[in-house]
Image (cartoon, rainbow, N blue to C red; front, side, top):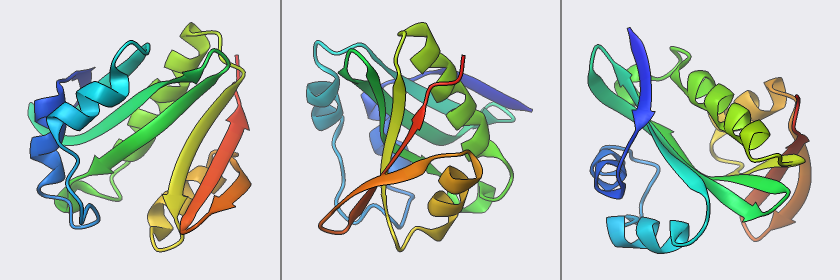
Length: 139
């Protein structure tokens, strides 16, 4: 059974320790600083009541809801959990009356690239190794 719930920066930090993609650890205090005074969400995805993924998003400006970091534990990938979290992320953008949803990723994260393209996101920018994807909010 899949469940989404609000989470804490400490839970995200703990889950990140188990994700090989995050070579530089984002601390709970860094997450708190990023979300400080910005409307946003920390989402924890659970399978059978065990945390297996997270998504941290916030209002980048009044019209853009930005998915800053997300991940799913390796043993739970390709099971639709990232899509479940993206669905909620996009619904939250509607709640905030945003015009765009935005995600940055890297070319080496093929699964994330595929997920974003399948969801109708478009590449809008490149900066160093990061690729920015955006899509209009669907109401």
